[in-house]
Length: 470
Image: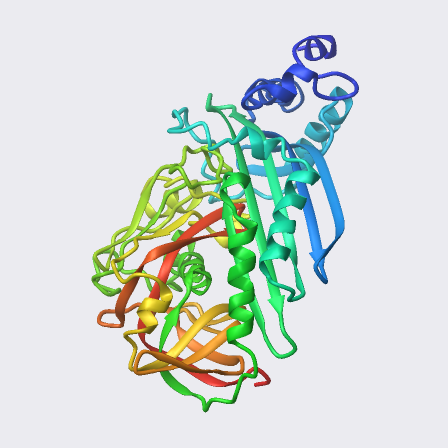
């Protein structure tokens, strides 16, 4: 296609036309870029093209005042060119014809310089996506005033305690196509409220994410943060040791994400550094874990980075490991099919489940779970978590934003933050999950642009190895 033809169909010397910016998905523009690849690299080249446009808005607050509001509108084009197993990627934030030409030439030249990749799986075949992505027009058009209103409610609900945090909104339209004939498009929105309230000796947190800003209540989250901060005042020391725990949804999301990255990851399985044993009763029979980028809570696009459509994947059913995640590379090596979990850089980190869904139980709220605990700890949050042994998912980290000692079902005192060293697999193993809460939290993951849904868990044992200092 000539440069003039590209201009007439949506690409100009300045960028996307108004029509291109408002289409539900950017597949037409991706097709135009693919034609450029064909001209530059030749008809025998494999190619993938991703195009996305979006807007992010971020309102930060500290000392109970908004101190920053930023917004960005972006356009991104990413191509991968493969020549007989030699491949390279390149990307740009410009969509004009000259920029796209240079982008394709750069990727093609780099591919010719690289060695043949024996694990290169080729492009994804044509397949229909199951959804168009979850899109909320009000979130896509959210203004600084809309986010400020959520901050105002958060501050007011804290009842005079100083608060800090952020409110963020994102909207994105995207398109994909490749030389094998796969075409896909989609759109998504997401919003997050994350804030703490503080006393002189404690912090409390309120956080949640959704595909709709209107579903998030600044008043509810601010009130929760303040209540936690007040109840955690004047913490005391607690000896290290093994304790029963009630982990709130933020902690549980952290557990699930480590299990997904290091255990259910097809690359980790192939390399022998994963715990996953298909068909094995590796978890308590109450555990039902899935990855579902297609449900009404998902903030994912309808396809992965290779263009394979997303679908629900049941990872654990009644405690039995049923599946692991694959991209096209690991699927080829394993003699399997891609599960639609390719991520950028997947040739290094493997295919990763990010839209995790742990099925709720009938245990009630985290407070109700703690009310049945003989002696243990109620934990709000984890941070600085790092894996020590991927094979057994032994992780070390710290508690944060409130820890309370519970005796005979009653909170007796807050305690200082503790360091833990714990196998996440063992913590959810057979007989280790005493109850699962019935209320879930929706937690955003900025790394994978995903939302994890998790209830609270009452676990039989968690190993605390020291105070926050060591």
